[in-house]
Length: 142
Image 1 (cartoon, one colour):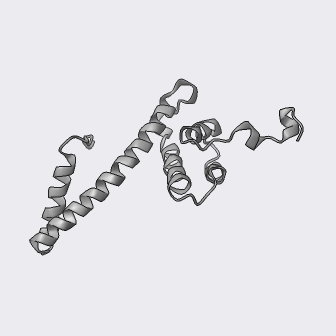
Image 2 (cartoon, one colour):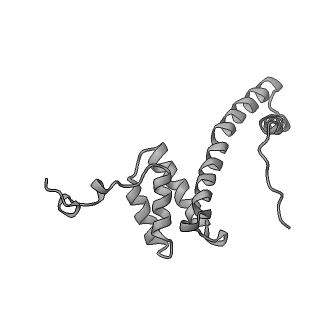
Image 3 (tube, rainbow, N blue to C red):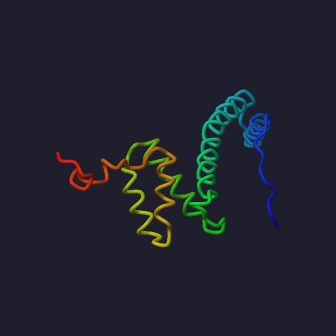
């Protein structure tokens, strides 16, 4: 049975907060503390849940484009690549984007490197010609 598509609307955060509050109360947490827990957890949900969705939507635009089209059946590794790229390169600044690209190409050689590079470019992590080629290859001398 297919699940229904979740819709983010104006009442989503309010409904989420009520749900968290009820769960906290069911566990025996006092009313005031349950309200505090619900508010804090809702703030965390609002800060992170939307970010995941925005990353996925940016990648979906690339995967639907004619020059970088990927069948929906084969998109999961591209979404995983984008999430990891975002987390370790943009949020934590721990890893070079090329290292993430190499890791995914080694794990799944059937992935299209051009599509992965388009995803990197979408997040501003692509290489400029001066970073990827030596001066003699660009036709200038150093």
